[in-house]
Length: 344
Image (tube, rainbow, N blue to C red; front, side, top):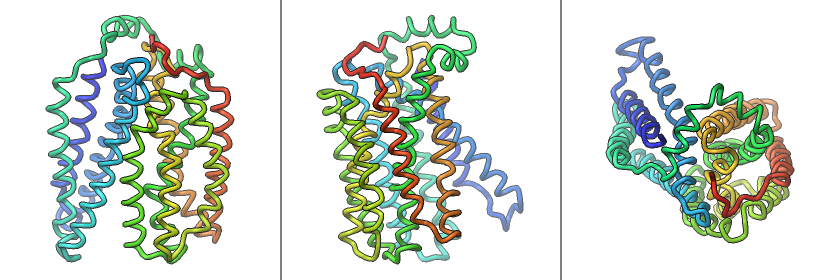
């Protein structure tokens, strides 16, 4: 069942956050401190890997067939809101605490808050209802042997489509929510505060767009929306990168346009992933191939950015994004349209 797995993932995330908040420093515990930090982060990474597959499947499975896009949009409504609140919390702490306070104890505060929110989420999930078809699907799933191999043997097209679809999604997420800030400040001379404010405004817009984009996909289908997103991303990402610099207005344009395009995709990620695999393979199909793609491309993106920056070619990263958008576009051309279809 999805509920038991999602209780486990949020318990792992909350436990990892509390563990980090309580860690001894290197000065107190020596090398045991970074080792414990690594273990806590691994626990949180495992939690995140399991959360995506089960939350995506759950949102799609409890939704009426004609409203799956709308239900899916709540994944990034919550994610985007959390990112925005975390950014605001970070800004508040840096404003009210000096450097010594931050380095001595202030850095622990967000992890305590995160752990407490996890406890609230754990309490909420204990009362979750399973999807109506869960009992029937569980019987089918228990009869499957070597489920990961079954996804490749019987659903190779779905595997390739998930990888191609997630390729651009993970790079877009990493670029706008992580890489763009240090790139703008270090490579283009932008003011850090201008970047933060522009990103915060764009993130609020991104959250507000999730439900309308999910509803639009329920109305016109997944493919038209995804093809438009990938095509515009391929065309616009390099010109947008040229605007990055010491101008708040231009930074706001870059973040708003970029996150507007990403919202067209992010709003229906759970629906698209869930529609790719049958019920008995849905959890492992999404979990394995989504997370593998995120690790290979999203996880290596920081290394690529640093390597290109060290070589004096930081701008080349945006051509890499454009190429990824082309690959995703070609993948989406061959993706079957499953708007309104029964997941079973």
